[in-house]
Amino acid sequence: MKCLGLVGDLNSEATVLYLRRFDDEVSGRFGAAQLPRLIFHRSSGVSFATAMQGKDWAHVNRLAMLAAKQCVAAGAEAVLLGSSTLHVARDAVAGAVGVPVLDMVDDAVEVIARTGIRQVGLLGTRFGNEQRMWQDRCADRGLLAVVPIPESIDRVSKIIRDELSQGQVRIDSKKELLRVCADFRKAGSRVIVVAAPELNLILRESESALPLLDAMAAQVAGAVTWATSLTVPDLPTEAGTSAL
Image (cartoon, rainbow, N blue to C red):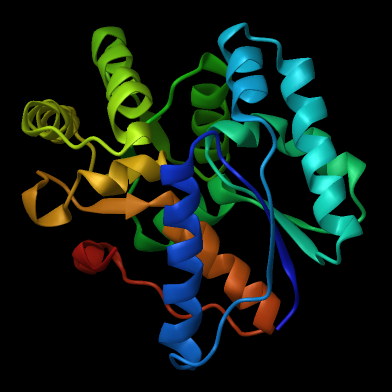
């Protein structure tokens, strides 16, 4: 198995979810005794958060590039950015390292495109650049990605930032998120992309009005496939979207 480098997210909850997902993906394919070959680098969450809140995307790019370069210097043969938000620096990182950058957005959009679904709800975006990134990539594949109304985006962001990233799961917040899921269905979406890893702490597909596609899980699955040189497994057709 090739060695992968993971640039950590802004908080420990998301990081733990990523590491656990890697373990589950590898052990599920190859047995419990197998572990992923993974180099993890986490820059200062304060530095990333400050730059993002200030919309200083040049500084975000610099921090992500430095972390990715350190992963490669330590032996990583490909790099993953460990959150949807960090993918705003994807092009800068790809231009700075001499190894593949295994992309969450591309992996998730590829899964959706193979189902035949044409409209998706996007849950978890926090910044305009991030929203446009998802919407543009979906549009490139003939998909329409819709986002919640601004008030709901603000509330979802607050739940992620102030609660889930601190390990807090609140019933009232779950109800709000499920209401947003129901709104996506009313607007014509057929699946919801869960773009923020932290949302896995609170959302369950059995409770949602629509199937949920975990973008982190799609990214990790694609990374393990790449690292082990396996072919990508067949994906469900639109008639079987609940398998997402």
